[in-house]
Length: 113
Length: 195
Image (cartoon, rainbow over all chains, first blue to last red; front, side, top):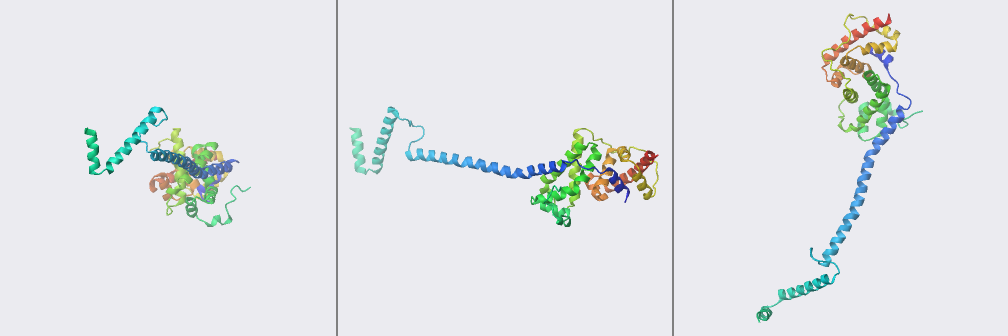
């Protein structure tokens, strides 16, 4: 046994009784960490999916209603009147787009008279 | 009671490097095997640097946690023990630096004057066997922090000069010189204490 081995025999320390248990617990915690992080991420996605679906539904609802942004959409008499006017104008506009030259001339004559 | 029942009898067959590769694959058994093998020398080394039982246990646990956290940076071709001892050294030095206990003693490597000439190794060994642990520790404490660190690594890591030089970032020649002169200082100190 050489000089340093002799010193080692004299100086080597023994850990306290609960040292291994503490290390064991620390490692359990450490190795569980990525799993917990992954679970947290999954939980985040689980919340994100219904929120996105809800937003999509709302967007689809307004899109299908054909209400342009910025127009009043409540049920007040003014809003109802406005929407009816808008629909009437819409149908007139459609008629004009599909109108023949003769029909156009009739409309213009009516406007000028 | 066996604390790590996962370690099989076959554990001893595997090299540290093989265990480390398994640890990189997140195998708990690999960690337990390496921990069982190195916990005592690492703790003894840290104790010799801090002289505090509770602190040396905490820093030993921190060393092994860091080993696990940095497992991805281990290169399979590198020697595992050098990797682990380097982590232990940094963990200890970081703590001592925070407490400002780490002395910069580059020029003053030895705490005691060198008086002894080389003697037969057998006589030194016999002397250590007869001397009390506290006195051996006192003599170690008389070395400068730099020399004490290198001697502690030599005692507990059992690494070669080359590996110690990698861990300490000293040249191999410096390591040899410091160990040679420290041994002479220690022998001289033991002689005085045993009288």
